[in-house]
Image (cartoon, rainbow, N blue to C red; front, side):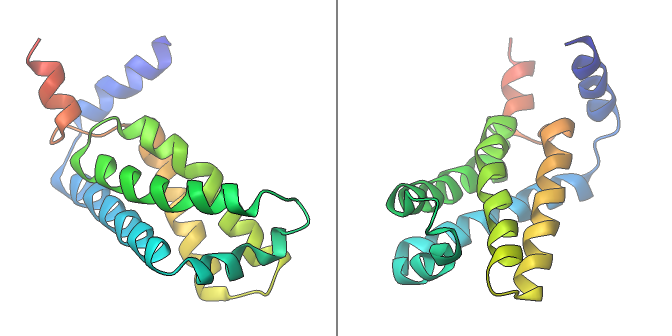
Length: 140
């Protein structure tokens, strides 16, 4: 726990606008993906087809779209950022596996890997100084 507090203090001292813009862009991207999945569930069913042998396709579909939708909003505003990103990680790991096990689409694989790396970064970094989390913490 002490290590995370140390990293959080470092992050709060070294928080710059580009990192906040990256966090907001990540949130907006995930939000748009959530809207896209909600509007086109057939596309999501096609994406999940390589993992069909695992089972639970409908559970995955009902998890992916709302997690992207709500998680994207939370990440963009910087509210409960680490929790929202923790909800995104299984989806992103699944997206990487779908591209590796199924039909390889290099653009989708690169995008999934990039979003995964950025999510892991913000999982440790936190939401930064210009976020709702930081504002609420300073109000105490």
